[in-house]
Image (cartoon, rainbow, N blue to C red; front, side, top):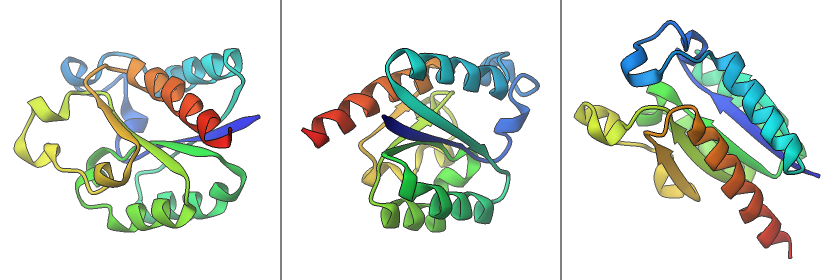
Length: 148
């Protein structure tokens, strides 16, 4: 069975309390439940991790990547500066999709830069929590094709 790591960075634990105009009203637990449900429907095992600390994310990628086939990551505010996260993702050798709930390209200039995106299979931004589902669908297919 394909296993995909779902990793969320700083402040995403506060979804449901944050600016609903950008992030909606759904909580991270509700997003994770929807991802897990959809994953089981398409034969994908999902594993979830969230941290407000860059080192915690790096440690998790290093510890969990050997048992995984891919990564969906929303680095939050670390998207622009998380070079150690990028290095851990590159070292893992896994396919990565970057997800953002809000449309980072329609917001402040600093949010538009990602250190991860140039190395990722793709980036999904602006589709709210459903972006994770779209990423899961695509990444599962991408991994299956690579195994053929």
